[in-house]
Image (tube, rainbow, N blue to C red; front, side):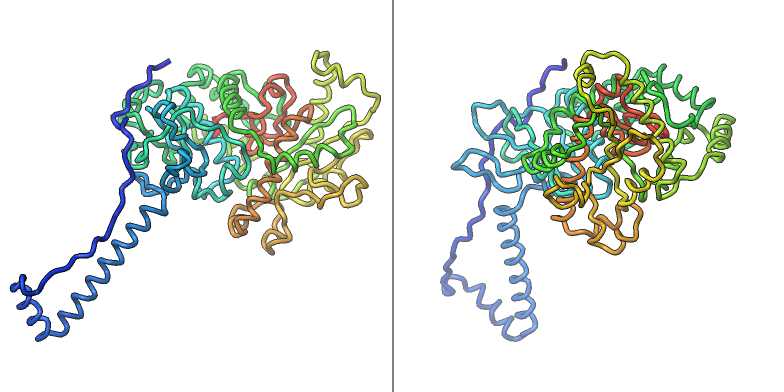
Length: 509
């Protein structure tokens, strides 16, 4: 464990105030000013210009004063920091509401080393959250206190969905003015296990996925194991679908996924609003089945993206390895923005494989064997409204009960409205779309986005915690997030991918 470094900004600074004091001047005592007045009287346009300049200066001063009182500080990049969104409340001794709050209680030690993560408004929920988890893991490894700025996030605030841990240290009152170098390469020979930016007590992560991936891999994946995976891809990619348990969770990535799962357990704690949605889903009758498996079916704009997820970026375009992989990729069916019979068959085969795993003796599964029900429920979470009906029509399994996390209007026990994390009736584009499309999503009002995201988080949490196992597409960020949240089940072979292996980075490895 690295020792904590003392911050050079250890003092607590008093908040600055701007006061405008009246000034009285006797013209008789300022003879020089008379000539100025006379000059202005001879040239009226100078008087107008002077008044205009004075007005502009007064407005700038007023805005600066109001900004100091009502707005948060700005980081070096100019972002508003929601963690301290206003000046501290001196009477309560606490910082105002923010994503991760730090007390101003003098009994707590000063935050000596901090790492700031800023959520962006550009990416999907799972993509951004997985990036956050990677930074959180590295913050712990390098002994930094993690701070979060979520004011620009297109999904709202972290506190809209989660009960977040309070900081165990107090922030300097002017912490937002501290210089924060970026987590980035210093030079081409930078040691990723001991990066050069560690000499700084306060740093920030600034949207560099490739560097973050390389940094994470260097610290949590053995280089020889990673090279072996890439060599196997030259011979085998794409592998037959669905993937086996071991091909879904490669041993080379277990340590990295474990670390992500450990940190996710800290931050993925649904708040009371999300827990209420979870409770509604958990009251459904199908939980009386002997086994309940989950399935995440991601269609929409992911169909185009998933086609490009491959190891091709690891090789030169002119190499034999690149050409061999590209030729095999060209032979596989192109992904479609709907659930086809072929894809449905892969999901059902993967679910059957998990059932075979569940029939193997395991201590924590013995309680399932005591139940008398013989059916198996397949609980579908999907961004496409027709996915459940399509899968039902393709299924020939006599004991398979296909259900949706959205509920069913004709269920006698369903009291609330049908659940959905994408309410397609809101927008025509969403109505026409087969599944989730980020561009259409970002047009929705923020309160609607937060409501639908709450549904998604509820579904993810219930499937990863309550289901005996689940099937998903490793090419989907949501699937990789779900695997991290259920890493213990994944290591038991109870998570299967229908396309590519689960990788712990933003870019395929």
